[in-house]
Image 1 (cartoon, rainbow, N blue to C red):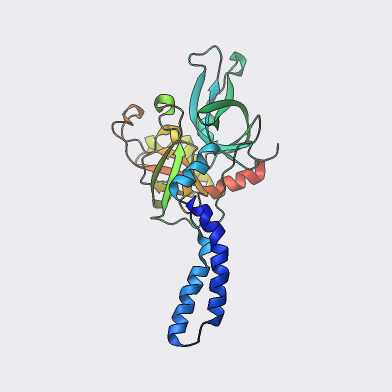
Image 2: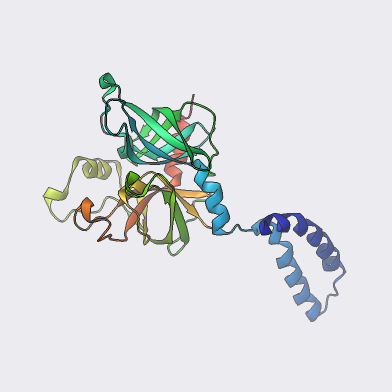
Length: 283
């Protein structure tokens, strides 16, 4: 409400200040006054939303990605998080979230679960339309009406120490299918293809990344969990997406994540998602 009022009042205030700016004397005191007014006049372009307002905008776009099979108990199994982009019928997520084989012959199908109103959840059929193996990204096209979309940052000006937040479904359905938001900072921007301590730690995915060239990834100090994979990482000024939650550093086993979380998570920069959308966003 406060920001809406500011949006209405700032143009009127700016017009009055502009007249005062032009009438200001050229003396030293007048110079400083002109500088102060100029800063105020810049205000309309840098209005920022509060985190609760950003979360309200983000949550309707965040979905659960999983599979559904009538003969299975439970019928729905969650695999990760995704969020609506593009025309509202595209969902971005991690490739590893949808990589496991689907038993189509047995009636299993890929779906997303979206929150339509309040606590009402709606299941939508989904299909894979584009994949980026190197950067672990995937695009799904869903059935039904468009979802609210998230804006993707185009500045690519992320800095270490920058405050961020991410929304997703940690620990799958254990905590219920309600989107949860965590807040933290970009603790490091570092190459993802790091040398392994020994040959046993080199797997096919690491070899592929090394061959195709290492790329920078965001390391976060916020605690994420495996269910957060594929969720949006967003900046706190306007809520624009700057990355996708990709993986969580696990000290011991996945079963110990609740009792012994490492607090170290990683996200893929959003520029790779923009490129994937440009290549594979056709209906």
